[in-house]
Structures are given as structure tokens and as C-alpha cells.
Image (cartoon, rainbow, N blue to C red):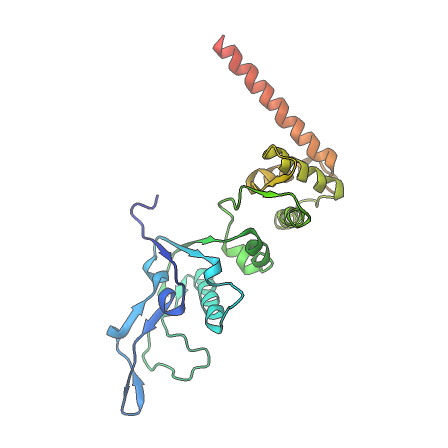
Length: 239
């Protein structure tokens, strides 16, 4: 429920907009600032609520030193629950003499990102610990060597994170066929990660050293049997 909590969408997540900007004046040969010169960014403005960001606005082919700085500061703030209000000055050319107390924050950050971004970022442990996949990406993709690799990478990550047996080649191919079945199109794969992950978890319970096509088939047959039983119960109620 976000009705009583701040919800901010930051479309330009530069340091000044997301973290902080402090105006400075050059007086008697030195830079000076007062507390009235502090302008907090959207990260602090979203404190106690939600902040939505598009990952491509931070991670892109033309990333700057500032972009890396923004991402690092965001991750530090989410990991520690504390934000430091200061200007972007990575080499400390003009450090501020103004001492600003660290501010505790509690923000849920919603990242809008593509599957390839998730697969890249998920190689970093801090990202996995900080962010959880709460929504699906694209609902479906065309069947190709690359999309099969995406599916395989996702399956591997689920198994590693949850300490499940890994899928062998037959299991991975069976999962891919199930992904096609979900969209009822042999030339496409479903990217409904929730359902795919559930199949992997259930198949693990039947597996020995690795998850095979037979294990996944057993799970699918269990689902079909449960569906038949549900329909039988429903028919009895209607009669």
C-alpha cells in the first residue's frame, strides 16, 4: 500500500538529483556552504516509501565516472541504511568544510531493467542481496540460441542461490519445452520466472544428483493430476 508513503520516479538519476547538491560560494579564497545550501535528492525524498529508477539511465554504453559514483552510493545507502549528503567530488578537489550528519533511510528501490541487465548485475553478490525479483520481465521472447542461453543462465542462478541440484542437459531442454508450452508457441519462450522457478524447485525434490527431464516431467504430471482432481471436485459441487 503506497497511498500514505512517498513514491518517487527519478528519470534523471544524476548525483545532484538522486543523492544531493550543495551550493558553494567562493569567499576569501575558499569555498563555503551553509545548511541552507543543501538540497537533498530523490533518494532521501523517498525515505519511508518507494523510489523507482530505470537502470539504463545509470548503466549504459556511455557510462561516466559520475554514473559509477551514483550506483556505488546507492548500493552503499541501501546496504547500510544510511545516506551521506555531499557533492560528487571523487578526487576531493574542493572538499566541503561543512560537516553534515549521516541520515538513516529506509527505502524500497524499484528497478526497471531488461533481462540482460539483470543477468549481468546478478553476477555481483551485493546486487543479489539487495534486490529481489518481484516482477516479470518481458512475457515472452522468440526462441533462439541467445534466449535459450538466457533461460539456462536463469535456471543456473536459481539452483545456485537456493542450493538446488543443477539441471543436466536433458532437464534444461525439458524446461525450455515447458517455457514454450506456457505461451502455446513452439517458436517462443515464456519468461514467467515465477512459474519456471517453481518447476525447478519441485523437480529438485525428485532429483538425485542433478535435475533431469524425467524429474521435470514428474512435476508436470503431478500438476496435471492436481488439475484433474480440482475439476472433478468442482463438477461434483455443481451437480
